[in-house]
Structure formats: C-alpha cells, structure tokens
Image 1 (cartoon, rainbow over the protein chains, first blue to last red):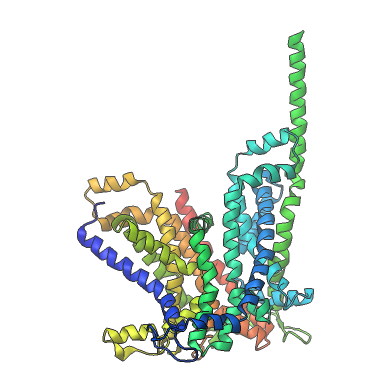
Image 2: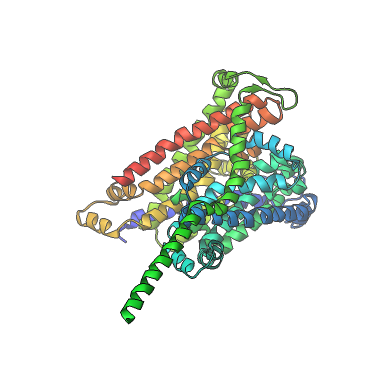
Length: 274
Length: 314
C-alpha cells in the first residue's frame, strides 16, 4: 500500500497499545488468580508461588459443576425453541408473505431496541403469577420471547432472499407447506440457523438481569447470574474471585475461538441488517 | 387431432396450475399464520404484555403487595422533578460519550489503520483481540475492571511506574472519576464491535474510488474524510444505534463495578428501576422510569435510523 513508513510505524504502535489495553483486564485477573487465596495482591504481579489450586477451590466453592449444568439446561431450553420458531416465523414473513405479516413484523421491530430493564418489573410479577419464579423456566420462557425480534428479523432476512421459484417448484410437486419448510428450506438455511444458534447461546449464557431478578438461587441461574452471586460472597477474596471469573469466562472464549468466523459474520450481518 | 389433445391438456394444465396457485394463495393468506403464531405468542406473552403492563403500573402507587392506588401521571411528574432521578437520567447521557462517541470514532480510525496502513498479521491479531470483550459476560468484564481500577490495581501500578504516582486513586470509588471509569469499561466492551463493523463496511467500498483519489493526489487524511467516512454511512448508523442503546440501558457493568456509587454518582436508569421496584417497593415509580427509559431509547434511535435511511436513498 501507499502508506508511508512513518504512518505505518505510528499505526503499529497504536494497534499494539490497544491490543495490550484490551488484554490487560484478562492478564490482571490471571495473575491475581494465582496469588494465595485471601491475600490482597498488587496489580499485575507474578506470584513467587503460583497457586494453581485456586482454580480448583473456586470451582468447588462456587458450585461450578452445578451452575455449569444449570446454564447448559437453560441454553438447551432456550436455543432450539428460539431457532425453530424464529425460522418458522421468518419463513412465514419472507417466503409465504402471510396477510398481516407487515403488521406483525412492525411489532417485532419495535422490540429490537427494547432495553430489558423496561419490562423487567412486570415480567417479575407475570412470572410469579405463572408460578415459575425461582425456577429455570423463569429465565427460559421470557428469553425466548425477548429473542424473537432479533431471531425473526434474522431469519426473515434469510428467507426474503431465497428465490420463490423454490417454493413454487416444491408446491407443484405436491409438497405441503410444512414439507416445503422442513425438507427444502431448512436445509438451505443452515448457515443462518447456525449463526442464530451461536448468538443466542452466548446471549443466554451471559444473561444477567433476568437471572438476578427472577431466580434467587445461584444454582438455578445462568453462568453470568451465578457469577454475580459469587462476587457477592467472595468479593473480598481477590484471588478466588479472579479464578472463579476466569472459569466462567473460559467456555465463551472457547466458543469464540472455535466459531470465530461464524461469530463475527453473524454479529455483523445481524447488525447491518438491523 | 393430436394438436387438439395437446391444446386441451395444456388448458387442463393451466387450470390445474391456477387451482394450485389459488390453494397456495390460501396458504399465503392465513394458513401461514400457523408458522408465525408460535413466535408471536412468545413475543406477545413475554414482551408486549409486560410492555403494556409497565405502562399500566406506572399510573399507580403500588408497593407490590397491597392494593394499588391510581395516581395518574404523578409518577412521571416525580421522574421529571426529583433531582436524583434526573441526575440518573443525566448519567446515562454522559455514558453515551464513552459507550458511543469514543468507540465509534476510535473504531473508525482503527479500522482505517488496519485496512490501509498496518495490513498483515498484526492487524488480524488486533481485530481478534479487540472483539474478545463482546463474547465475555459483562459481569466478568465488570469484575476484571473492578480489579484493574482498584487502589491496588494494575492501572495505578502502571501510573506509578511512569511517574504519575500522584494521581493514583480508587477510581471507581472517586466522586469525580467513578462515572468516567465506568465509561472506560464501556469503551473496552464496544470498541471491537465498532472496529469490526467498520472493517466490513470498508471492504465494500469500491477500490476504484481510492485509486481515483490517489491519481488526484489526495493524501490519506483527505481520503479518509472524502471516501471512507461517507462510504460507511450505513455502518456508522448501526454502530451509533447499537452503542447508544447500550449506554442508555447499561446495567450489568454498573451493578458489578459500583452498584451506582459512590453516593449516586454512577446510578443509571436500569439499576434505579431495579432498586426502586425490588428494594424500595415503589413499583409504580420504577415502571414510570422504565417507560421513560424506553421512550428515550426510541427518541435517540429513530432519528439516527431516519438519517441513515434517508441518506441511503439519495
């Protein structure tokens, strides 16, 4: 490229500094996690005797196995249903073009900008009324609803671009609408479905507000919600808190490392189409 | 003879097709709602219904247990006259500087650097790392930064190392610096998102434009302002929208890092709604604040969308 040597040097320094700055909190957590439990380490310092056992201790005192299972159950409750009904609705709006679809889509768009705090208070009383308070359903069911604006929006954007000849060809073959959807359209929508599944998995795992408000027992919460409770209990023990936080971060970083390409593509396309 | 048969069969075929089309027309009319219904039911039950209920609650004085009392718009009057609540709303607008203005501007510059200046491995690594905060729970980000910004933390350590030991403090506990410190966490979370989005936008700009401007002798700065920025109108719009919503609805980070303190220096609407409803038992007032928050988000986001779309059509 045409960039001068000086600007390339300056640009390199800026990028390196920003990269270091982004990694700083992770590095700081990591070195703190290796200090003896209960001590007050200082900033970024490598301990003389790294206490790898802190990770085991944090795993045990935070009931990590239980909350990991709880998070996984919540993800399993939210993601498949969200992806399926969002795909069905996206198909109805993008391919079938149902009557009244514009109105339905408009209502959904309204929800795209909605801060969850806006409806958390009535949601609490609704969930209490339904008898789900303090159970995982209190997180699962509202999250499915809250993911609908983005999910339907995302799937509609996919189905709008599928040529309608495909549906016509299938219907001349005598396939019912459901057969067309399940046999022809779903297999073709795989990339869009996978992206939606990855995004909703991460958003569910990281969901904090619903967990804190609707579920009292950390053992029935999402990972992020449980981490909030863990901070409350162990906030003064910096090494242990750091070790626990890193354990809770790890699965998401792993997902990011594996699915990085789909991840970036999904988030960005979703944003641009929004 | 054979011709006649063909004509009839063609006619039959056409007739058959039109019944098919008619049948499909029915499917397109109403039967398709079978596909739309589950999503709309979930959305209606857990978004639209609570949304309407929020507005209803906001018109009552209610402690969550005893009989609610109708108070009309009184709760709204409180939101707009109580100095603490007004300052809480003010804080979220200050956060827009950190959550939106800085990440969008810096993201634009960093993306331009990655694309035009520092191409190659470092650029890829920086992109991957900068995006990382997007995937970790905000709670964890809050805990990590809580530690970095504490009196014994990495920031003060670095400041002391470069001879700025005099300004070290517990940043999140400082009356003046707590809100900017929360803002810095927001920059950290959102910079990668904006950068990567801008990169995608830049890849769509026609390279011929750059070649033409180089022939005209335009420098990199002029190129940036006359080609890159206008070409990214759509992406900038999206970045601003997403980050403004993040600023106005901040909750996780504030809850974990400061709980709104010291005093109410970092209290934001999201956290205030939570505390009013579940600790102070002022469900009506909390709901009024919630409605105000949602309206504020729309007031901020709709003009941005309008601006971006109008620009796109020109």
